[in-house]
Length: 111
Length: 112
Image (cartoon, rainbow over all chains, first blue to last red; front, side, top):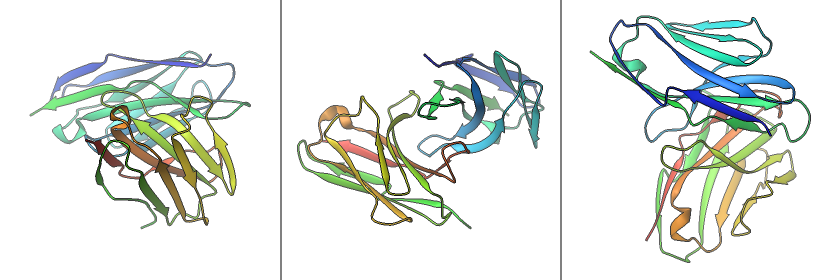
C-alpha cells in the first residue's frame, strides 16, 4: 500500500530562520511527487512536481528535492506570509493514479 | 485568470436534507475530482470524472453522488447528510490523471 509520512507535524520558526520539511514515501513505482501549500479554510495551492531522484525545483524561498525514499521542502529565510500547512502527495505508476496525501506540516513563521 | 470555482463557499444544511455543491473550471481540463477534507486531515478522494467517465472510490459511501453535465461543471450531491459529513469539500482539476491537480477554494459544509 502506498504511504506518505510528513514530519514534523508542526514547525515554528522565527522570520529568517531557514529549515526543511520532510516527506517520506513508499510507493510501488513513483510517477510523481507533488507539494502543495494550504492556507486555513482554503484549497491546496500547487507548488511543485518532482518526477525522479535528484530532481530539484525552486520557487522564491522554497526549494523541493527528491530522493528514492523522501522529499524535502527547504525554506530559506522564511517570512510570516510563508505560514501555512504544506502537503506532500505521491502518485504511483499504473493502477488508479490517484494522489496519496500526507497529513501535512503546519508551518508558523513568527515576525 | 483560468481557475477552479466552487459555490457556495459555505453551506449549512439540516441532518438528512439533500444538498448539492457545485464546481466549475475555466482551465478546460479533462479530469475533475471531488475530495473531502476534515480538520487537520489529508484530503480524501471521493470520486473523479475523466471526461464523462465516472470513477468512484471503493470506500465512498453511497450517500455521495456526482454529476458532470459538461466539461466545465461538476456537482457533488449528498443525498442524506449526516453529522459525520460535515467537512470541507474540495474540487480539483487536471489535464489528465498523471498531471498536477489544481484545487478550488473549497466549500465548508455544516450539518445541523
